[in-house]
Image 1 (cartoon, rainbow, N blue to C red):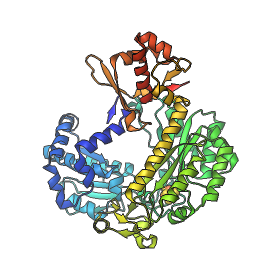
Image 2: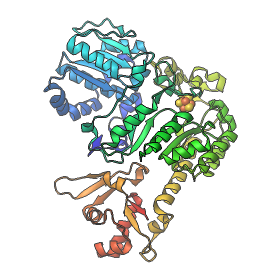
Image 3: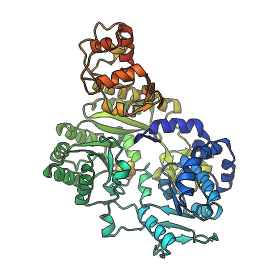
Image 4: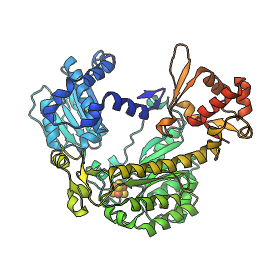
Length: 548
Ligand code: SF4
């Protein structure tokens, strides 16, 4: 969902779960079950929602090829429903499916899909070059010289094809630039993080739980030349952007250092981010150079307990993590994020608490702990050999494991030595509390509780505020006719921080925007201390302001 150039992913997920729960639960269906989804209530809502768009943007314009990119499994059935809808209205349109979900589905499932549905072709792995070949084939009759393609026996004017991109990238492919066109991104706020391709694959590639490595065709790590990365960055700088995210599973020390030095030597003043693994190949000098070039990172530590790290086969232990974090600290690399996995097989509540306490020692270098519950996937090392890890696969998990149409599904399992589901969620809550405290400390300089519990403005006059620019950009006008209210979604805060503000408060925002103000200024505007206090609490609760 995109409004005024801003993606409201969080609202989208909430609405999707609410309205289209059936697609969320079922994800990738058996092919002979697909028909049942087309008749249900949710399918009708979806078709109604997009009816006008399909008519205007596809049918009226006589579009010859429609491509669907499907990043998440719960989008698969909706994509199929729309594909049927389009094909019913335009029999000669060519429909092509691609994206991560298609990449992870088995070839057999895709062949059967093409045979039994309106889908004409599927593209696995990198889609750009195959899509170009497909366009040339359909529009100009140019034959496809793709060595890895295979045909289905569906009869059609156009030969339906499932094809994969190249097994090994040639030198010229390593140099390719997939840049976003100016006309497509000009509405984005200038602070928006812009993705830059740094590499495919992972240079470690041995974690026992990991499925990411399967997204690349031969699982070989390949980085792009530093010069090409810098050229991409310059291309976006010319449009005014200055915040970049490297697309990488984990950036290796030498490459990160080269990019950093190149940015500094060329006086390129940006912020850039990448995923890192704990790797003592990063020297203090390198980390300092990275810091100087505007770098911050998300470290995929996952756990700090030595038993857990061994199970995950991360290739390091707690002593190595401490040494690495100490170097980050000395290099003054701050505002980083740390990834944690909770509830892996055999790990106890006490061991999870040990990791939480470990994290608390490093809140000066990490300002967010991104915590998720362990999932067992089919083609990870753990999914292939569950008995080796003491995992017992449940009956429904067994069905899932053997009929999963490829690698997409997670497997339900019973973990006799690990935690209960309630315990896992309790640990997640403790991390959420820690994150909340850190956010509050940074944004409100320790004043959050004082403001939210204040009954009068007696102690508030010395605190100065400024509106948070990013939050203001996320205001959605609720009524475009008389402009009488806004819904603000703060994507960096938790769901309860989404607020609705009235016309008067939005007028106040317009007056104080970009200025420093205090409680006295708010009273002057509202002419009532109680209303002023109520507005201030709303602004703090919705994370609309920062304390300066
Ligand atoms: S979890 Fe990260 S570091 Fe480990 S293999 Fe996967 S991508 Fe590489």
